[in-house]
Amino acid sequence: MVQVAAALLFALAAGLGITVILAMLKANETAILSALLGEGAFAADTAPQPGPATIIKLRPSAPRRHIARTTVTRPQRGQPQFSRAA
Image (cartoon, rainbow, N blue to C red; front, side, top):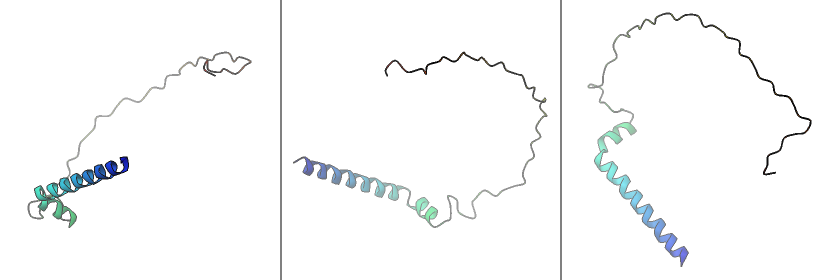
């Protein structure tokens, strides 16, 4: 009985998925088909044309200073540390 209910639920989900895919195709048919054909989102004549690249000048930054960091060493115990749960 549970297997029959699972099969019906799977069939319902598959049917809903196919319905959603068909609704998306109906709403955006031309955009999807043009993308699949390799034309892209814009038609060739209305596509934005690239212009000359603009050069952005960055201001020079100051050289980085390396600061020595102190390290804290803790004394090693003779026995390995275990968690309290172990």
